[in-house]
Image 1: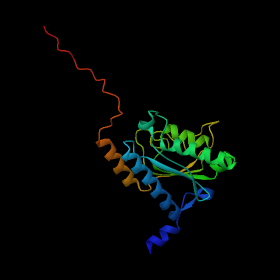
Image 2: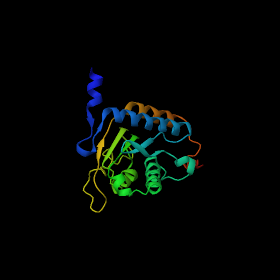
Image 3: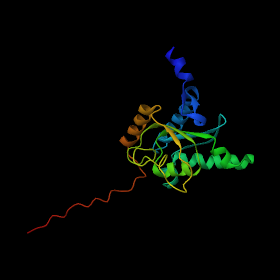
Image 4: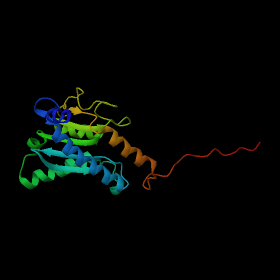
Length: 192
């Protein structure tokens, strides 16, 4: 009985709300994208951009694969959504203003700024990003008073957070072959 009540409880507020059932469906797909990232030795973050109940962009981190530090899951999804708009002759502003982004980890400051500039109204995410979070963990790009930087957006945190954290832990336990070599210098012994 609790599950049925949970399914009908909307996530988010007002025009930017989605059902718990939709959230579960899209977050499951985002989690699959994160698992794919992990399998490809990328930080396990996956996301989907959904417009009118259709995925118009999806992404997983591609930083190591592309050797491009900006290829976060959200940026990949934005690029795919822009391509979707071009391919269908749709105005990107109209699509982005009615889209919901589902992502397994709180967007970093860079990605939160991009989402704000694109005027995404609602972001549903899993775990917090304590090092780089742009939705309140480090900076609150999502709702801060930032003139000429798009529109503030609503965040719904904590959806399947434990699962997202476990994937991050798994990634950081393994060796990253693309990480730069340590530049720690050893002190030279001085002979007196």
